[in-house]
Image 1 (spheres, rainbow, N blue to C red):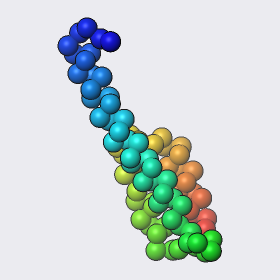
Image 2: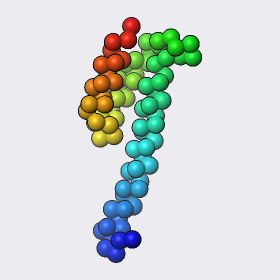
Image 3: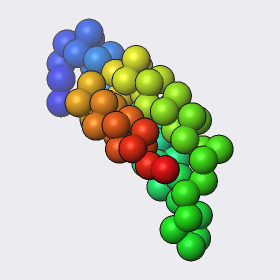
Length: 79
């Protein structure tokens, strides 16, 4: 355990950010799966929403640029 006051604060901040980032990642992964319905048919209405969520997650530093670009490419190839 840290003895320095600033380090204790950093630990608290990291814990909070970890919870927030984990929730955002889980939500993003769920929306990536929502492109398909139960019968594995493509749902076109969700494509734009998922791409927007990918951009937001990247701008918040939750996902890497490569993850965003790879998934956007996969989604745009879907018919």
